Amino acid sequence: MILSDADILRRLERGDLRVSPLADAGLQVQPASVDLRLGTEFLEFQRTNIPCIHPNSEQEVEEYVTETQVEEGEEFILHPGDFVLGTTVERVSIPEDLIAHVEGRSSLGRLAIVVHATAGLCDPGFEGKITLELSNLGTAPVALTPGMRVSQLTFTELSSPADRPYGPDRGSKYQGQSGPQASRIQGDSEFGGQGGRRGRQGRLGEVDRDNGDSTNEAGEGTADNDEAGTTGTDEGDRTDGSSEDDR
Image (cartoon, rainbow, N blue to C red; front, side, top):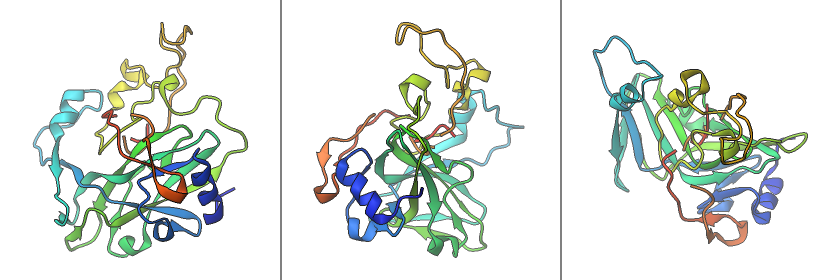
């Protein structure tokens, strides 16, 4: 069941679903979604002459991207064919009985701007800002302004709460992310990492077993602490440096 605006507001009021800061609930809560705003941080991919990037090499991935900070009131120009990682202003926290989907806004889509390549899923248990995979499929540069509504979240209720939600128990790579997060695929178990393994020795006292994880979250900390008016959402950020999603 996809949540309606009334359901979304009810869950925000209850506090198990959090979107923070929700600056204007009347504007951002749509009939069956919540609009999210564009943050000020971007990761740009450099033009490179190297033969290829090995996903399992953290160094190669890090050397491929550069950080850009856009001051409030300024613009980020997304050129045709460019791909950058952005982030939302809002942090979200998804309860164990919901799953969220990241979608672009139709008005931006009509300008050939897309907000995610594959990372459109926020698993139950995900907490953090959402990393946006922004690209310009058109023929003209488009100016993006931090603070503009750029994407939306829809929420679907699961048939039962997730037994092992996204988070520490799964070794989820993007939990608590506080800005755009480059790929951490080298942390996947097939590359020798711990991503998706249950029960790290000494933490839960269980034997590791590989289960894999799936989230963006989708951009890369835990929940924020300040009250946000009648919606029951939280203000303020905590950092961890890890998406929102393990996608």
